[in-house]
Structures are given as structure tokens and as C-alpha cells.
Amino acid sequence: MSIRPLDGPARRFEELLGPRSVITDPVRLRTYECDGLTHHRVTPGVVVLPDTAEQVAGVVRICNEHDLPFVARGAGTGLSGGALPRSDGVLIVTAKMRRILSIDLPNRRATVEPGVTNLAITEAVRGLGFYYAPDPSSQQVCTIGGNVAENSGGAHCLKYGFTVNHVLGLEIVTPDGYIVELSESGPGYDLLGAFVGSEGTLGIATKVTVRLSRAPETVTTLLAAFEDVERGGRAVSAIIGGGIVPAAIEMMDALAVEAAEAAVACAYPEGAGAVLIVELDGPAEEVAHQFGEVTRLCREAGAFELRVADDPERRAAIWKGRKSAFAAVGRISPAYIVQDGVVPRTALPGVLASIDRLSHEYGIRVANVFHAGDGNLHPLVLFDDAEPGAAERAELVSGRILDLCIEHGGSITGEHGVGVDKARYMPKMFSADDLDTMQLVRCAFDPRGLSNPGKVFPTPRLCGEAPGVRRGAHPLVEAGLAEQF
Image (cartoon, rainbow, N blue to C red; front, top):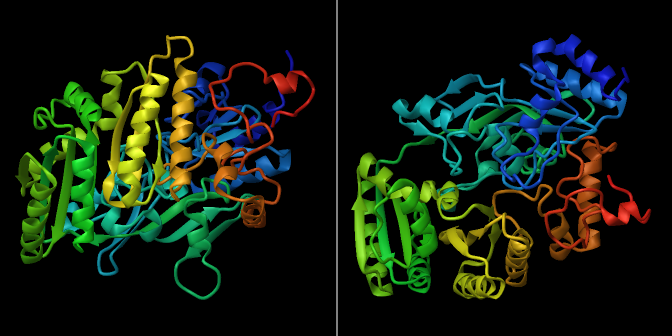
């Protein structure tokens, strides 16, 4: 029997964690071959499931001894390939680290392990009048460790900010295997801010202290139906321009509504070309005043139907379609790409019109679901992967959408991260000097480049490479003209 390169480290992982927490079986390894970006797949060399920070640190130190790359993974719900494993490396899965360690209401904070789901934090304090504000659509299953890595957002980040605004402290395992604490307090560089959103390239979070927010006195949710996205967009501009900052402003176009109806029968207004969801929260008197203004502005922009919900059951009914939108498009398309880009809010109408032109040009349908208040687009690029060339056209449309975001002064990601999926677009947004500076920060934490390599920064294999799903050996590698990392 031949000895594989990872057999030696795997035996040491078993000594450290126990054999039940180390996976080497080829069939079981395939369970972890991708995250939510399913058209990028790599079977990991070894999977380990530690229970404690000390075990994570021990695994990382063994990786350093053997010069093995390692990737951290929570629930695997990421949409940019940030947790895509390495075939020559170790996948460190934190799903077993899911204890809520402490809740400190006088100081409005909770400390949890990285495998705790986003929603579990709110559920732990809901009856006490508190909640955790960042709310990705996948909050029922995504983990707080993954939220920290990607600086995740959600519908209510318009008013309350992203994960980085709610993390008060971290315990991390550095890329060379030390356990250290990062805090928002104290003088010196903001290492906490640098770590949140670093996509696993600066180490692995093993303990997270988050801010708990007071549940608002009143919450009112409004659904407004428009004939088209342009009219809905005018309502958004008027609301924000009027000095109102809702907790959330979300929009879905006709195709996204069609998908949601097929999946969850959300009963949105019939014939709507765009549905706008506006949620207001705060003191009752303030919410009542803002609600009157929002209603007036929506009507002036052309809303033909308004629905109001001020109790949890009816609010859930309004949010049902929006929260299910990503998965719902599976009802109307065999395959799809979830894109994530940002444009200035005022550029939304023009960019949406350009996306519509791209859709017709390439014969690829695009459903638009987006955080309208902060210009964070989530176009869902639909295609039939059984149709020859459709996947490639969908990738082209997806990339052209990012080009539009850059051209309008926006960003290639709002909350899903760069991962492996968008690394090739980084040179379009940043200069070589910009990227070199980012690499200097990364190298200060991880000079050997073992922590989640191949993510965020383009490699020679990806830089300038035409987008598309590629299988088998790269032609440049076969020709001896390039090295595959």
C-alpha cells in the first residue's frame, strides 16, 4: 500500500483530536468539497473537527510543521468560495464549537464559539428584550465564525451596520498556531477591524464577543407594489432623500417575485413589476411619523398597492418571500449564480437597466433581489446547466454585472466576500500598489501563506483568465507555461 503525503499529519491529528474527529475516507471527504458556491469543487486532503481553541491551535501547528495549507469552514453557506478546501491541505471545520459561553446583559454583549448560528444568538436573548442585529438571509444556518470571516450583512444593515460594527472582541488562532485576543478597546492599531472580513487569510476565530442590541419599542413593515423597478427605485431615493433611515429597504423584481411565489406562495400583489419592503423601527411616535411619510412617498412614486404589518405574524408573512428568494429561484431555473455587488444608490436605475440589456444580449434571465437602501445588488443569474454553453454565458453575464458596479464607482462585493470566485476581479478595482499593500498586511499575520491561500488575491492562474467553469488540467499548465497553485 502506498503512503499518501497527508497520512503522517492525519495520524497526528487523530492523536490530538481522536479518530472520530478526523476524516480521511474519500467518500466522506466529498461532503466538504464546496460551500454555497457549488460550481467550484475541490475534495479536501483531510477534514478535522476540533472541539476547542486549543485543538484548533494544535492542528494549525501541525500544519506549519508539515507546510500544509489549511482552510477554516463553519456551516459552508458562503457564496464566494471562501471555504473552498485544498486537495493538498486541511479543512478545519468549526461546526462542533457551538456553545454560547456567556451572556452579559448589563454590558449588552454575548460571547460565543464560532460554530454558533447567527440566529441562535438572537434566540438566546429574545425573551430578555435584546437581539443580535446583523441578519444574513441564511441566518438560521450560517455561523458567527463565517460571518466574522466575510463581514456579513443582511437586510437590516442599512441602519445597524455590518458584522464589523457588532464584534467587540475575538479570540483567534494565528496562522502559526498561537491563541491571541483582539479587542476593540485599548490604544494601537485596529487589529480587530483588520481581522473581520479578512476571509480566513489572517487566522481562525475561535471565540467571538458580539454586541447585543435592545429590541425596538415598535416595528412596522410596509410592502409597496409598483409596476416596475424604476418606480420602486424612485420611492427609495425619495425615502432616503427625505432624511428617513429605515431599518431595511429591500426590493424584488418581477422574476424574483415569480420565484418566491412558486416556492413559498407569499401572495405578493398580483401584477407587481417590483415589490418594495420598508421596515421602520424605534420609538412608537417616531415610527408613526416616518410611516406616514414613507406611505406618502411610495404613493407619489407610483405604488398601486400598500400593505402594512405591525405584528410579528404579519411581518413574517411580508418577509417570507424576500427571505426565501435565493433558494426560491431553484423553482424556476435548474441552476443559478448568486452575484453580489454594490453601486451608489443613485446609480441603481441605470445599472438595473444595463443588467436587463445584458440579459437580453446573452439570452440569460436575471432576477434582481437587492438591499435597495445601500445599493447592494444580488442579481440571480439563471441558466440551464444541461444546455451547452449556458453556464459560460451565465458566468459572462455575472462578470459583466461586476464590471458595471466598478464603472459606477461601486464594489465587487457587498457582503459575500471575494473568496475564490472574485479574486480575478480585484485588479479591476485596485491598482497593483493597492494589492501589494494588502499583501503586506496579510504577510504580517501569515508570512508563509498557509491560512486559506488562493482566496481574495488573484494568482497567476486566475489573473486575467476568462471567466467560466473549467474542468480538467488548465491548458497553460499542460503546455508548461504556467504553474497551478
